[in-house]
Every structure is written in C-alpha cells, then in structure tokens.
Length: 183
Image (cartoon, rainbow, N blue to C red):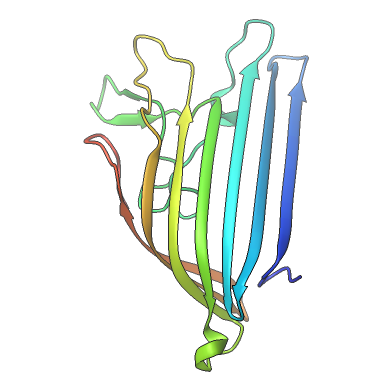
C-alpha cells in the first residue's frame, strides 16, 4: 500500500544470472519474499526471507566476485558487513579472509511502530527486530565453513529524510562464535 512505508501486502523478487560461455561459466539464482501485516493502527509486522544458490558450470569454480555475502545492516545486523560464511587464514598476514559462498539464507522479522502515534509523523518508524542468516560454500581442506545459522536481535529506526532513507540499528548477536566479526 506504500513504497516507502508499507503496512500491508507483499514484495517478491526473483533473479537469475547465467553465463554459459566465455572464460566465466556459472549460474546464480536468488529469491526474496517480504510480507507486511497490519497488527494495529501504527503497528506493522514485517517478515522477510531470502534464498540464493550459485554454481560454476562445466567443472569451473564460481567466480569469487559473484559469491553471496551476509552480515551487516542489509542482512544479519550485529555482525560485520559480509563477515558471515566461509573464510581462510591468510598465509602472509595471518588474518581471516572472508570468501563469500554459493548458498545464502537470510530471515528477518521486524515490528515497525509508526512515530505518527506519538506526534512525529509518518517519516519515522522504529521497533524491535530478529535476524538470522548464513552463507555456505564448497568446503575443502583450506577453507573454514561459516558454521551454524547466526542470529541477532535489537532495535531499529528508519527515517525517510529529504535526502533519502536512513536506517539505524542497535543489535546484539545471539549465538556468535569466537571467529565472528561483530558490529
């Protein structure tokens, strides 16, 4: 019912990339489904699910720059941007190098409260959220898998400003592990 501040309805997006020839051969498919439910006037439940799968063709590896990533404000808040999923330890610096992966899962639930109910107008919405997600890749001896699905919870606020939308989040990772990068 609104592009900027929806209260009911659904948003779906499906994408498919195919590169069957040349030096790079792969396919990549993604699907996102988002639903908005009006709980009461000024209170909306948003549920979002995203799935992705990619694979190299003709026995070739997936190009690293086409991999999926997760973590950060657009997927699983509380974890550093693009920090979830497979990684390897650099031989030169001994740092973790995040590789992304060929499979991605993200789930978000957010209770959006309109600030209009407290006199601040429709431009501001805030409320609690719960995020979950992970990226997986093809494992070999050198690459460490991302492990279990990571989860976080917290509070978020969205402001539709004259310069464009801004989103602010305060998140707490719920099941982080020692090698996770938190934000």
